[in-house]
Length: 189
Ligand SMILES: [Zn+2]
Image (tube, rainbow, N blue to C red; front, side):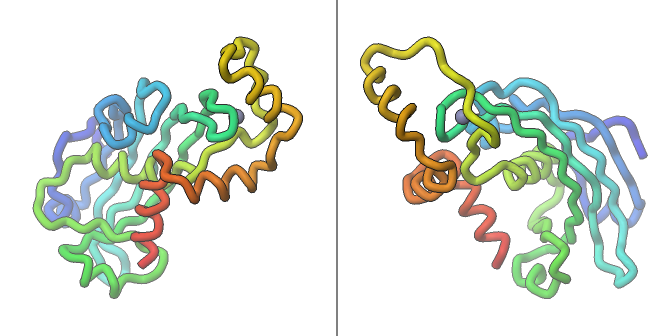
């Protein structure tokens, strides 16, 4: 495994050569992801290996790890999400081909090589983020209350909805994470 990530990869060539890479990529360069983050700094780490499974299907396996900060949908303060996801991607040339894949494989549709490696990492992180992120424990107390929103904040302090309600409410509204929900939905079909 090479300790350096190429910017672009040609998956099918790498499958034949049984190549692997590991390294880091800056989150700030992942535009779709960066727009969802409170602070798009830091790196994502990637390990990826190309090869074939026992049935001869071209695959890429590996893991993506990153610590990202998104906005809590309940208190609107930053919250940390630890992304640590393993993937097995089946390399296919079309979505039609992807329908024949075993269930545990996600398709990596390569319509034209080369593929930007950071996009693959970006997709994996986007899929690992919660559709609606809220602090898992109690939200941190915010001391600097804005004067205009003070009454509203006090009100919500005494009448804090359950996180399930927030999630349901957020899912109804258009929110930045709706794009993730859509993406997850698409990949299921
Ligand atoms: Zn919160």
